[in-house]
Length: 194
Image (cartoon, rainbow, N blue to C red):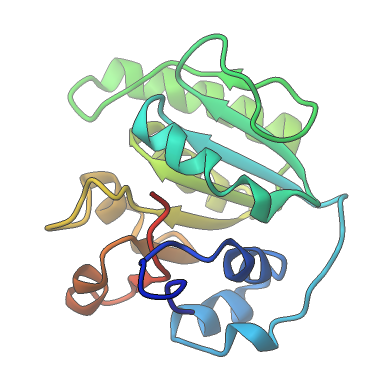
């Protein structure tokens, strides 16, 4: 998968094609530079996708990807109250914000996410960060879901701490900077969301 044109913008059609086939072999093939145009398109609105992002820039980046999920049953989760769902009919669920500096808030967020994952039973979990998104990826793997991590565009010199934490766990790990994909094994560049 390559960026759309010279702009570096993420081609949402390519993302949609990649995400519609969530079996592990296909994700790993895409991560190794497989031909994205050969992936099968599946139009199955019964598939459940959990999309998790902290408020602010992480949320904005996640919302810019929503057209890739238009045919799926999506549940959005964020750390701010009163968020409007960018897609679908389900209200955005709010969880506590957390950071690595406060284990108490991390456990609180993990409890909330565990409940959401148990109730919604997603087949795929996608996050653009930060710490709550990393928790969702980790808990999602434990529940058997496929997972995709998209590191924030703000991380141009190195992967975020959360991105490094999920690198060995997420099925597909994306950066928005080509030089980071060249530096880190298991990280792929598909373009930029912003």
